[in-house]
Image 1 (cartoon, rainbow, N blue to C red):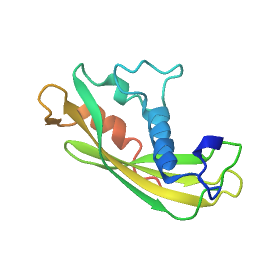
Image 2: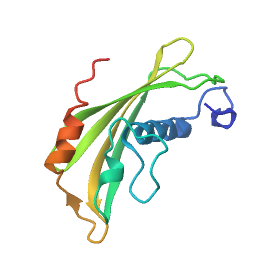
Image 3: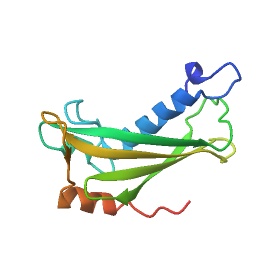
Image 4: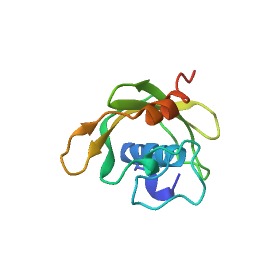
Length: 141
């Protein structure tokens, strides 16, 4: 957490929470193609292995603020796992926890799809993408 992430109440601002989810997503699954490869290979290399002209796009975010996340000078804990894997899209689930108390502060889901950059059409997941995603499903929290 950064000092600038805090709002006037001393809590991490809701917009910054969505940024934290993005950072967790990139750390777990790699950066989008063209953004450069990470210094360390992500646990599941997914976004940086899509074909040329394919974009990984967020379709929807759902964020539930269970309790406020107080500013701490240490990183928050974010658990991330794969939820539903459909024909042309998939869900990522997150729990953001206070790094000091361990309490759950945020529960969120991001719905994503791969899209052809030229046509704007949603692409079906390849068997390889499905297999990689399915390895990380069914997290119990």
